[in-house]
Image 1 (cartoon, rainbow, N blue to C red):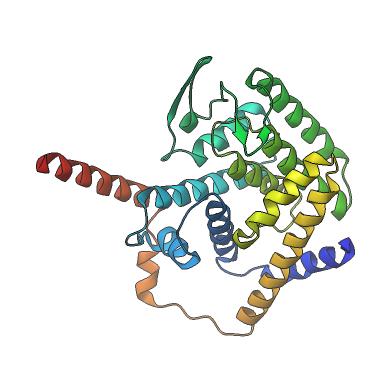
Image 2 (spheres, helix red, strand yellow):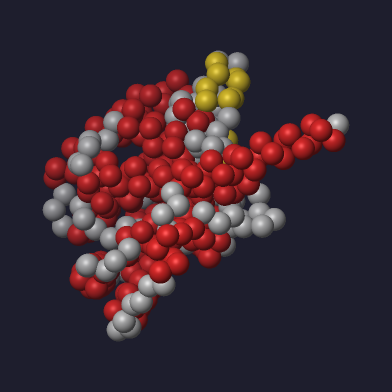
Length: 295
């Protein structure tokens, strides 16, 4: 993989997208769709946009999937705002991000060692396994997260080149998901932290494509087993190249066409993510009430 090629693609992408109305927003929609789909959301790309842009729910799709999408989008915007403000990474900041990821889908988990709430960004108090892998002892988690943050904050000051900045973003992603400090939402949070690092450096954001989920998991596991993070770097650079090329083609096409907006769309776009979440909660409440009446 030629880093120079990806660097050039990133420059072209930034030049093409500069000044485009709503470009960032639709990039966020794409990131939200792929990241939640990796974790099991069944909403299509179009349904994700309809939910986030117009507050339209997808018929016959689980309400939990809608909440997952709404929560992730909120967490993404929050994370990127932190990056723009150059807020240093800290355990409490990461816990705030994780809490937003699970706001409407979180749960209380009881273990022998204590109770934690995934919607509050609590660190886990029990063992976490994924396949044949057992993640670090929960008692070590707070110190390990603190070390990860301190290390990342120091490296932010040192990195200079495009490759060094990308490697740091991918390393934070890898280290965090390999730590798995929360009971749930670790994958989503790790990808948000990667985007945080890229936003700190004013780089285009990365996506892990949902169709490459298996390769993603394999790259993570292979890098861990062989203790060679460059395996994960290679995978992420390929994802980065794929995303940038796709965006350049799309943005280039849009630039050549005169954009027009329908008056009716302007009003509908004012619906917020929080309003959509409240609407979904209303659906849940009404369903629960009708079920009780039937009983």
